[in-house]
Image (cartoon, rainbow over all chains, first blue to last red; front, side, top):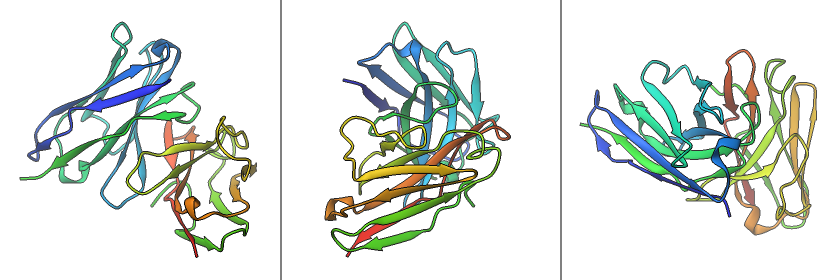
Length: 119
Length: 110
């Protein structure tokens, strides 16, 4: 069974940094691209970032480019998101998700972790 | 403003058939697959339709998807109260080099 478990969401001050983690199990992680998708309170889904199965290609939404960095460690079946220069509008539930390939959609989702940016 | 356009709301009565539209452009729906997700209140999204019209195992055949050009639609037949949820379309966008979602459609079962 595919399982994705996010962690690291906390309350952080504007301008601060945070690293989210996602532990994957039930599949060979290197065979899949992985993504982060967020959802602000009461709002819709927003695609944030994506990394290819081998980690060689990364993609970012314009709203986070230059501030967020996605990475993965396939030996540990882990996905990460380093978030810097956080702003109030980064407040959201962050979902880790699996994609069969870079160009395909998410087929499995974690339960999400809440990041709150506030002073 | 979302790259993919969905109606904010839809409704139907039990047993009815409802359809939710998703409109995009040549750089997303026009050249890539569309995906549909269901999000029940307080839960993570769940894949409903992949590659335009394919259902993952476990998804009832009451749910169907179609795509034509730069538009797509999700149809739900035999509407049930448990179908009350938010529905999102999504696709890869070649110009943005990223994923894009629709704004979501809240389905009410009256």
